[in-house]
Image: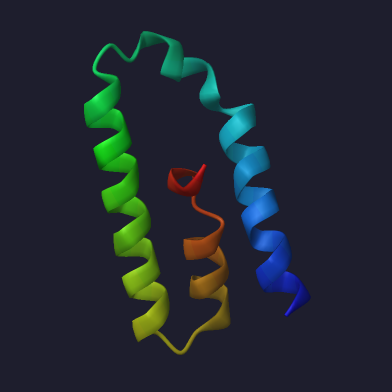
Length: 65
């Protein structure tokens, strides 16, 4: 359970560390829709798998942030 709780924090940290490219995004609405769709797809993959490591990667995805 601790791994699942910390995965979101690790994903947020990685997204923050690699967010320099976001200053060049001019279509903010599209970026939000794409991030939401990516998060939804990652959640669906996490729900359909039996691998805890794949779930951790899906939860730690930067699209959540």
